[in-house]
Image 1 (cartoon, one colour):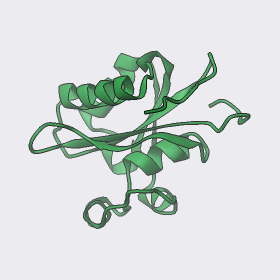
Image 2 (spheres, helix red, strand yellow):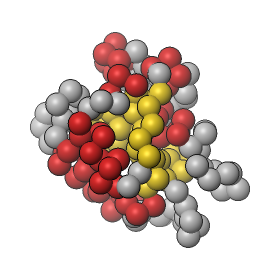
Image 3 (spheres, one colour):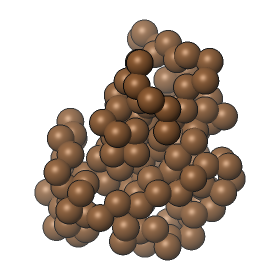
Length: 142
């Protein structure tokens, strides 16, 4: 599998979708496994983004803090307007947008390139998804 080539100052945005009460360990291991599989470093993460309804979720807040990243949240209506490769009608019914992780990552990078598509936790039941995006080459950094 070809790995994305990132400039030295690349800044990534991680979109996080999560069920209420998800553990930080589950979100963190899901992100780190996905980053490792893609050959990316957690050190490049500048933003953790989610839907506004999940901003107060302790694990999402703790993830942003642990990464030294800015936490951003977006209204469900904003995320619902973002074209994503893996929408979910179940997520749409639950939070008002068919995508949280992918749409939040793309929105946080102002329409950036999705490097890691929606990735579910490997735990059963899965309580989170993550996606990672970066600004398009030549775009302004976040």
